[in-house]
Image 1 (cartoon, rainbow, N blue to C red):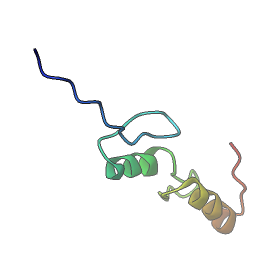
Image 2: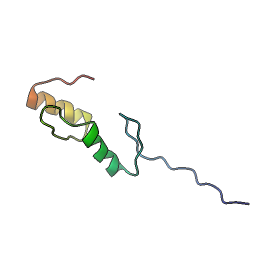
Image 3: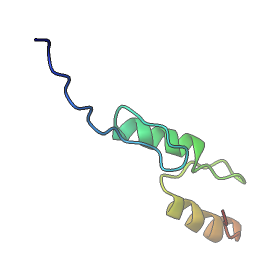
Image 4: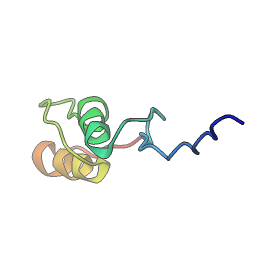
Length: 65
């Protein structure tokens, strides 16, 4: 008999591009660099909600998908 394969644990994944990552820290770094960067001033934010608030308060622009 051989060794049993352990079930693969769930890895954190990006909701926006469906890539998976080693841990949450790498996922957050990816999202800040790729998905939550202000197109006007290049500020990196941590969440989509933060991005929307930033755009509205700083640039007076509404973000739509």
